[in-house]
Length: 169
Image 1: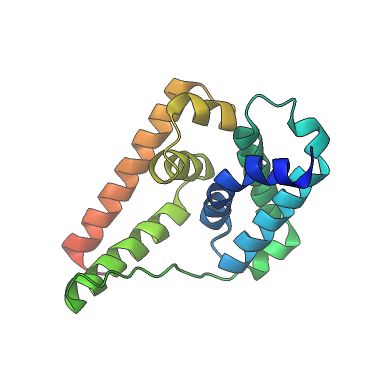
Image 2 (image 1 turned 45 degrees about the vertical axis):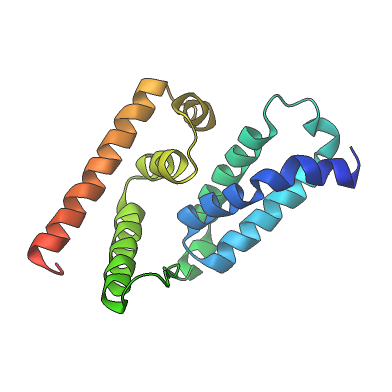
């Protein structure tokens, strides 16, 4: 596989790799490094890539494993907490601040979810994978994926409602 073929296969899902890495590692810099590392690993396996049924699923699994290993490593203590910015020029400043606050709260709540729920929620609601793809990526049964997603959504909903009902707590 030459460079052009490799890029045509990998580039369509490069952003998904980054978003998954960002969800797991939180830090933008760490997510960029992880994505770069995965792309290098994919390039080193470019001869074998042609034999894979689903290169995207393989790359997502590599990213998940790499990020989880990174979090377990000694370097994980150095990760910085960085939140993405939410901007919408169409809304009033107050609504923009409220929306950003809600997005930040959802991100904080997601960070506190158990690892499996965090991954399922990211893959389903952000990356829009179907249940069978998530089950394959995470080596779970589709029913377990549905249960984990349901629990994750319930936790996010309850904590967000609690925050809005009782103020910052």
